[in-house]
Image (cartoon, rainbow, N blue to C red; front, side):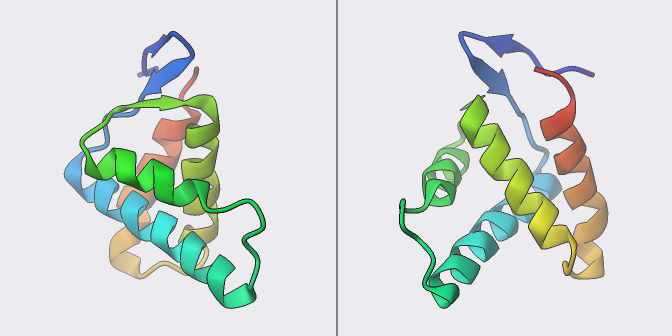
Amino acid sequence: MVDPVEGGRRTLAFPRAEAWVVHAALLDRVRTAVEAGDAPGGFPELDTLAGIEAGRERFAADEVRVIAAALESYLRRAPPRDLAPGRAALRRTRSGG
């Protein structure tokens, strides 16, 4: 199913299990950047995470890219319990729009 795109924003309604993995992936990206001393432009992951935690389901294209990049990185070394919901969330970010 392709998620609706309206006004340049995309609906990504993550089910609970996927949302937890997206949350973990975004935090992992920030942690990795901080540990590497690599954050010249700030952390767009934190802004995206704040939106998710606020219950927002509409995301700009750059936020969708941030989520997808975080998931791609996280899934390379994620615990087994996060693999299926993480892959589903990644598919959701790629499903059109």
